[in-house]
Length: 363
Image 1 (cartoon, rainbow, N blue to C red):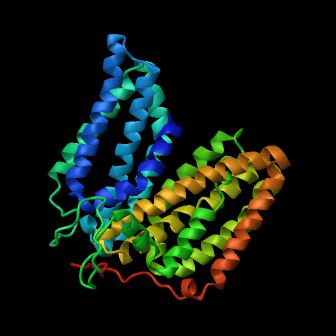
Image 2 (image 1 turned 180 degrees about the vertical axis):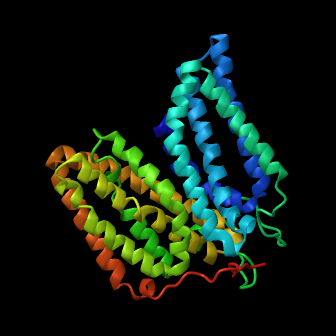
Image 3 (image 1 turned 45 degrees about the vertical axis):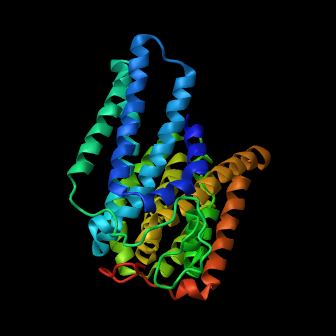
């Protein structure tokens, strides 16, 4: 089911970004929650009626993945407008902390609910979507800046040369790539993020307690990420974080016991939240509001694809050359990324967008 949701994201991701920029983001998010409510509720209803089938579960997974993709893209694109540019970094830190808390507690809560009845987890999930939809409807903040220009139909092509004072017209998917690639630093940092090896998450599948420990540590440190991002230039954060990962990664293979391996995981777990918060806040702060959905979906789609490919490659290498050698290989790859990023003058000179300064908007 997880694979079906990942495929849904990869197929629908870019279109979701275009729709999140075109449609009313608040209404879109509410309808996504209502749609996921219906999908989640359909499982216990079918179970009680004796109609539940594997095909229905697959359909629920696919459509839930599509709605989740659209919701997440709209949510990220709307965040700067909801919290304000001066609180964006802190909001991202809190958001990541909440997400990590859900990852930790989710499996335990799900197990407890399943023990009460097979349909109970789905009922609770449906209720959570209902609560989310109501909460969104009660919010008075603007989820996007006002659009004053009539846009072409989705997928249509405007062959006129776009003026400098209006948004690029035409197919929104090419606009997505333009928005994501219009800044050389963003391209460099996004490439580094995609190329970071995913196998670090599953190189030791026989030690799940380490994964749980790392999630707890990330939850505790996510709130400190905002402070670090505000204190240091984003280019410096990108360089330092890559070097720290490159230096720490080989110790996964060198650790003689579980305790030392847990210490390495604890130290390495500090890096990812700071890196993620810094990169996301920087990208959102320099992207015009009408392109935030497109850029978010472009980055997330490529990153998800890279992580899926990296997981497959990591598993293959572990089976082929062993976990230790594969760890050294990916440690060397991280070192190459760190060297290339350090050598990029544009990245070294990049600073975080000033707090309170809104991203440029073309209208």
